[in-house]
Amino acid sequence: MSTDSLEQLRQRLAEFAAVRDWDQFHSPKNLAMALIAESAELIEHFQWLTEEQSRCLSPVKKQAVSYELADILIYLIRIADKLDIDLITAAQLKIQLNENRYPVERVKGDARRADEY
Amino acid sequence: MSTDSLEQLRQRLAEFAAVRDWDQFHSPKNLAMALIAESAELIEHFQWLTEEQSRCLSPVKKQAVSYELADILIYLIRIADKLDIDLITAAQLKIQLNENRYPVERVKGDARRADEY
Amino acid sequence: MSTDSLEQLRQRLAEFAAVRDWDQFHSPKNLAMALIAESAELIEHFQWLTEEQSRCLSPVKKQAVSYELADILIYLIRIADKLDIDLITAAQLKIQLNENRYPVERVKGDARRADEY
Amino acid sequence: MSTDSLEQLRQRLAEFAAVRDWDQFHSPKNLAMALIAESAELIEHFQWLTEEQSRCLSPVKKQAVSYELADILIYLIRIADKLDIDLITAAQLKIQLNENRYPVERVKGDARRADEY
Image (cartoon, rainbow over all chains, first blue to last red):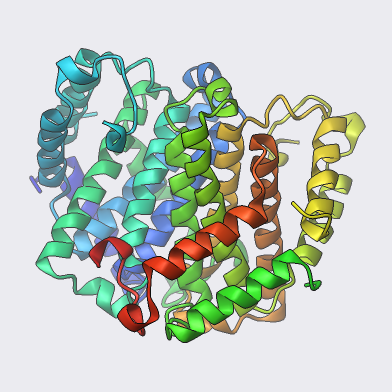
């Protein structure tokens, strides 16, 4: 991970857990559970909205959603840190895979599930 | 978002969707669903492992997990982009809130749910 | 749980796990992970569909969805069994709570989140 | 679905939604989101517990968990109803598939992911 903003968050979160003696709870298994719980809090904001409504949130709702996204990022950084995985490199590799897997000429305007191709 | 690695991913993913004409599917509602689906693929890797096993993944498993983390980050960046939310700033604010919410002297070594305090 | 179809499934699933020596893996923690992973497979079927499309599935898709619902029910029954919780009674109590919490005259046609009332 | 306890719940829930004019929100897509959000509330109860602790809940915690299980069952019944799927039949078919897929002599005491076999 480069010494940029994501790396700064990683260090701050590692310190946050260390001084609270929380590393004992932060197994990848437990962190994966915490991450999906936060993902579900995001879902709750959108479950009764139409797609169109989800594109136009009120300032109050947008603020709440931004904290849910933050929580997801926080646990994502923690799991990656615990497993010594570089998130940015992993994402770059995955996007490369996706670019090969979904050639523009084949999938343009079509969002079927990958396994349906 | 600063012009660092996360911003570069944001731009690449926006381009990826645009050339495939996929923005029509990328409502925040739909992206939240895609994000939690990826979070669940992470869960699947850990659900039958002990916490200890989840800390010591084989190279093959670690590689697979790194791609799941990448997928989560990808959708997280996309939702933030669609809602014009700066992930890094949101995370910094949330960590500040957590630091106030969980003072070291009160929660050291204790991971009860926040609402149980 | 009454001696009806749900109870028959509970017994069959207990036997399924016992003969495979899988009870050692079936802690409530692990089963909750398996359950949410199955819930996410359901999500995957709907994430790129409009709400309207989700109401009118093709026979092939409906068949696939029926198996995802089955998987969720299976893990739900297993967790309840492991914790000695009667699902039917719990649901009846919860519906009673919901009936009190959401009086018709106050919520008719309005699906805001409970905590927004 | 037979005229047993599950069918009684289905009818009561259909009536609950109808009198509140909530069917407009209960597309399978939205209900799948609500279901996974409830599954995540279950996850939250277990995420910082050891597997052993998850097997031995306090009466207060067990009560809370029973309501989460109820919520999951409620949305499961609603989706099945909306898609005209018989949950019990689907589960019986799926268990039959699993019995064939995981022969006792091959998987006894081994819980690796299905796709790893």
